[in-house]
Length: 346
Image 1 (cartoon, helix red, strand yellow):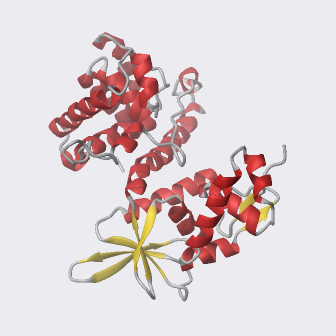
Image 2 (cartoon, rainbow, N blue to C red; image 1 turned 180 degrees about the horizontal axis):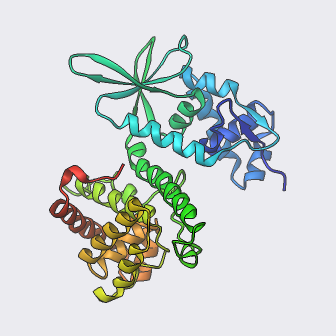
Image 3 (cartoon, rainbow, N blue to C red; image 1 turned 30 degrees about the vertical axis):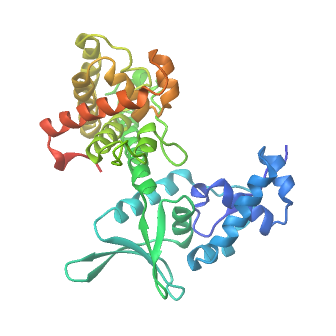
């Protein structure tokens, strides 16, 4: 089957661009008919048409207009997934600081992330490429807030929800790279390292916790309190850095079943990874059987609530209530052991 051309961006951040941008450029820059694009991607022509119209309307934004004008279909993909994820992680981390915003003006060479502190004092945190800034907007991780001559953008709820996954992906690679170096000298167990310990991270993956965080309860308040979300994010980061296999911590029924994992932590020469393993095990043990399974499946393994309900034998739509109870207990555990100030690794 014929494939749509990949996008070539000036700064190499095409890996972050959503499918809608690829389809838009295939139609506008390459001249491919909408029906052909829909046939290649296996979607309805009306879907592609809506995406094309939406992207065209978004070009009123000078930043997006400049970025899209400089993108072009390429014969081969120039995507650098790891570099793109790391750059997005750094940008969102900076934008999540109090008073931080992304600024852009046509006369500026690059968009800049600044932070307003004190009585209107502005400090430049970093600058980023036009392509990366456009990718953050297209993924709805940042949104325009206003401005005429100078456009202002701030991190969105979606961007904050995605940040722990991006940070965890970066930290997990660093931890595994460190372990690979130790394996070369034979001081780690290569059989253990060869196991599948993949965690779904990066763009395109959204946990049930992130979805529930956008919902409101019957009283109009958020369904998940901010402390609950921070607790789930903390466990996700620790779990990803630790490098557990997907089924390592599921289905345990007594504390002795976790002892092998505590022993495994002692074999790790990388202090950061060893501490992440121990923090994860302590949290799981405190949650206990059952509650730990739902948190692991929904927050760490990114399993959908419906799938979790079927695996656990629960009635439909009961999973969100159990998940909230589990996150509440997890939040209390972190507050009692380390305090709110240590809610996140990154």
